[in-house]
Length: 316
Image: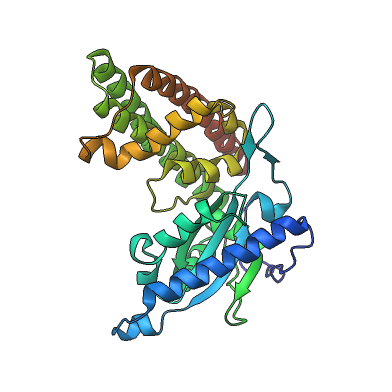
């Protein structure tokens, strides 16, 4: 059945953090302080009018901490901890660029002693967010439905969605799946080939790409959105929030395994451009096994979602 021509508007967004423990609320308060401090510092002294008018319009908590389904078990065998996921909405698309405006905030989140929970964030203009919601883009419509507003400059609400038809949703998701998942497998196959030849830096970069394309493929298939980011730790957080089964791809209990994953995170830049980047064959073999496991989990999650969309679209 196609969606109604004029769907009922969604209720107003939530503003309360009462479902979170007080210590988590304090961490989010500190995260907001850092965001505002670093954004204001990045714009300071600019002569460009559009920078002088630069504003953070809203900061919205989404994902598991907004829904109340977070996991915070860093000291258990699995060692899994959900991230705070934040959507930052600015008044100009140019202000969404990471390096000039947000990289210092990202660094401070990792080192600030008052913030124990990992913080991940995406930045978009209000126009971009509203356009995505109007198109029924699941990622942003879910934020519109489930998110908690932590800060807003004005009380202008986000728009209401105009969902696409079940057939359109299925065809779009299927197209994403058929594009990204084979690409991820190609990167993995090439990494193995070069690893067998005794290379290390090239396989590290290719494994990074195999992981990145797996995560972006899943996000696009399930939500029709992926952020413009190459940080696979960030993409991992977003993807695992969509399907918790993906947690099984990366063992986290050993410090060596966490360190090897971090080397893979760095490989996107350093494996190509730094003569100092080093990674051992043992680490690459383990990363390859994890990547293969990730691909299987991603494929299963995507096929499950596609089957659901196919049923909704009346396909057999």
